[in-house]
Length: 302
Length: 232
Image 1: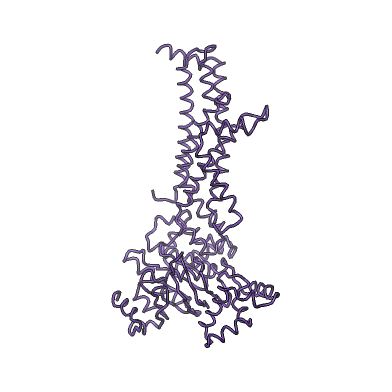
Image 2: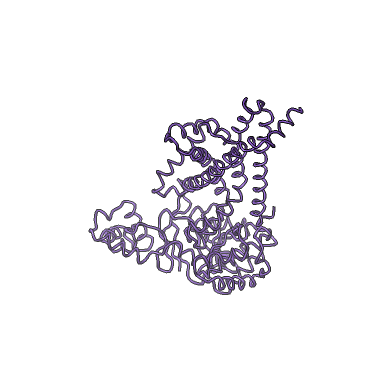
């Protein structure tokens, strides 16, 4: 469903993501863990383009979502003679090698020298057909933030219905119906007319989840949803997330809750220094970690 | 002292003096309101241009112009700006003086308002914008529905300050020969009228005080209404 290919992210000279690739399938619950500064949150934020990758591609439902020069669309590059000869020079043919060749072609602008004139027109058409605009990506991917980020100037109900109504996805009545349905599911229907400042952290986060769900997203992204909460409020938020997991929602979760990762996750990614260094099922990951850095990390947090 | 009180009574009871004061008050209010509106408009536009994304190439030149505008206006005296407007830029004979003053004060005020508004928008947590964008809302909708309503709350006290300062600053229009409230006091106190400045100055001071007091009260009411969504 989401395919991350060879993504780099630099902030100035600081490289936060280094050649990250991963696949997220429909219905999966992918948990990303790792030490702070390892690039977990940045990777998550790249998925809905709150951060724009410096290099590399992200695909969502077989559409490209990372903004690239239309002329440098990877599918098109792969059809060129230049690509074939460079790939042959690599000696191997796997996704990493292909991504490396594409990166090289883009960086060194090799195609302009080698390919014909109608290439550009062709590539622009391909780009138009295969590119998913950022706002559409975000409508289909819900995001939950560490600090909730409820809109302080709007009531709870307005917080939840603003986007569906503004984007004309629902009429006002439908939006309110959906909001009330989800609010009662998380047990906060009585709070619909209050402002966020009167709620506790746990309540705010449950509302933030409802706000994302009200867009009927295909994927939910969670960026350390329980890290800013009092310990006794963590449970109520995790319960809502577990319920989502039971409903087979596709989720990508950055978290420090190891117990939750083991119980709910279908796959664990361990990140360190901007790379995915280990990837496994939760059972295998927590009982037989392979990478020495993973072993060290787990010994500290478990 | 009895002289002072009888002078005050004389000012309030003599039709000629009251006419001078009303005319001056009207002039002060026209200039203040006109300049405040112009300043708000200019300030908002300049703030938005200055906050626009650095990636937006169309606004690169407007951004430079806005920076120069703020630097020049804040770096030179108001009286000088007024003189330049009246004697250098608008030299057409018979051009309404009110408009000259409104332009000079409005342009001056805009520079300060721009910085207040920019500060107000920057004071809204970036998380609010991110949350809006993460729902797929376009940038302008996020700005209009989420960021600006919260920014206004933070900006109102600073804007109130600016308008109060502006009203009092307009007293220098007498330097280009306009008859505002301050000039009215001078006229009433002059030799052919009362021949004493004390009472007229005090009366006019009272008028300024009343305007500013009413304005601060209004601002307080607006603030209270806007803070409905806060616990504070």
